[in-house]
Every structure is written in C-alpha cells, then in structure tokens.
Image (tube, rainbow, N blue to C red; front, side):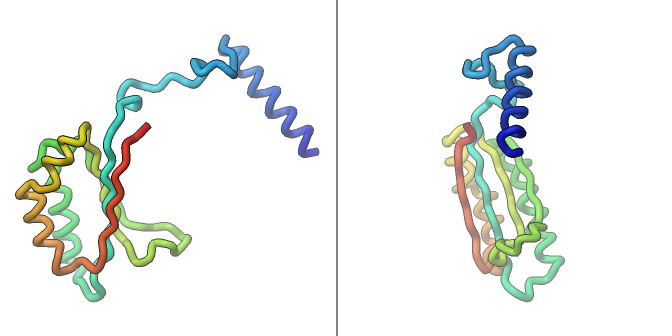
Length: 139
C-alpha cells in the first residue's frame, strides 16, 4: 500500500512538472517567487524572559518601546513581535519574541549601539530575567 502511494505521488509530481513544461530535475523548475521574497535579509531574533512578578503594565510599556525603535532607527527594515503560544511547553520561560530584519550587517551595526536602542535596554534591564538572541541571513 505504501509503495502504491509513493508511486502515485511521484506520478502526480511528474505530471505537474510536465504540465508546467519543466524538467523536475532542472534547478529552474523551482517556483518563481517575487523579488521581495528573493531579497536576502539579516534576521535578528530576540527572545525575552521577564522576571517573575513583572507587572503587566510594565511589560506592555516594554513591548511598545521595542516597537517604537523601528520609527527611531531607520536601519530597521522590518519589525514584528508576538508572544509564545506553543502548546509544546519548550519555551523555557521565554514569552516574547521580537523579530527585526536588516538589509545589511552595517545596518545592524548602526542599530546595536544606537542611543535609542541603549535607552530601550535601560528600560528593559531591571525587568529582564534572561534574553536569547539569534541572527541569521535568509537564503
């Protein structure tokens, strides 16, 4: 039964590529994406674990202050954030994820020591139990 399913899946995939007029082994057979999606970006992922007892009002102030950095620091190309809602319970106490994108490493180099970023760190610091930062280039 499994082999029949695999054969059917391969047949469907082959038919798709034939109908598209492309050889499935040809690297050019991959779907075309928009130029914006092809643009390489430097992602800066920041996770916060707040100290136990930090008031909700203070956390909201910190969330807003982080969001304001995009307006204050033009090198931040994109910004988004959210709170953990994973049912896996593997977040190790990290509750907030902030996701910044930069076009270049030079832009990130301007952001890191920027006075507004430093001021944000001063606001955050007394309420932060732990932070995790990962940067990577999109393919």
